[in-house]
Image (cartoon, rainbow, N blue to C red; front, side, top):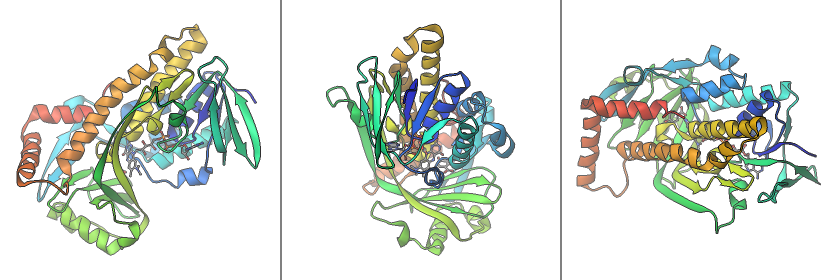
Length: 389
Ligand code: RFL
Ligand code: PHB
């Protein structure tokens, strides 16, 4: 088999790249380890930057998103029983968009299918070869048979646990990591959201987040111990704990119900450099992870895809390799800023097990500064809606 760009991973990064390139007549094959249903069962991101929305439009897959998503022009930050609002619109002129990762991934799969795009599911033993030459190829097993794809480029969009990053030799690869001493326990419930905007809440019992997918689908998170398992938390215990961590007015109006999904995500900051090795390019979670506090994970994946897509277009349409040659540098410059925002927002709002009395006072002062200072709110809003590409 031959294609122009072989894409490893059929998550949002890989599918978006495939669909964008298809619209410009560039052929791709997507290799996905799981099934479509499995990928669509993962409940993840909920907040999209405008840059992501624009890419979905460029990919011709925004019809349902434009109809069903809704804009948020601000967010609530709470600390114990006090709360304040940061307006995105006032400080940046921009909103963020509420549309679940599950839905946009479904839209991308539907578009690939409608265009007869090649997505091969259930692949195993993917090996990326010869990316330091002009003739890379990828081998893999599917239905017990080995296959080979020859290509011009390989896009490693296979998430944090994929093979693409590991293909870059350790002598070339440099990794930066911080693992946080807590996780997020999240639930999805078919209940109306407690508030029309997100509430990020810092409390003496730990962090909580009230988010949503639509008018009758809510997503809530609480900071939990890394040793917890979702089975340790009955729905009732979850709701009780959430109520203790959000302002009392919100707790009183919270509508509870059975969870339809419950999972724990560990929190990690991670960046690998460089994001290109020869003809292999890393995109999204394959190259970097942020703690979810700033809602940046999927949005940093989108900026990678933007840089790679334009670099590949420049290569194929203008025979100019400047865009792909500068891919790693451009992508990393934006990623490190998103890493900084996600790390600092995590520090601002979470309780660390080893915090001293002094550390607690510093955290409260940080939150009070954000509450009282217009310039600090503007900086928060600029980061939250997304820095320019
Ligand atoms: P994905 O989604 O992990 O997809 C990678 C795909 O590659 C496949 N794969 C392989 N395929 C072939 N061969 C192999 N060897 C393979 N190994 C793996 C996998 O099966 C998978 O289908 O990475 P991608 O596409 O880069 O997308 C990244 C996003 O999924 C991620 O950054 C976000 O979900 C992060 N995130 C959030 N991001 C936001 O921008 N806003 C948010 O509000 C937000 N909330 C979140 C989040 C992530 C969370 N969790 C669970 C980590 C909330 C949570 C709780
Ligand atoms: C979500 O709705 O899943 C969500 C929203 C905002 C975040 C993280 C997750 O910061």
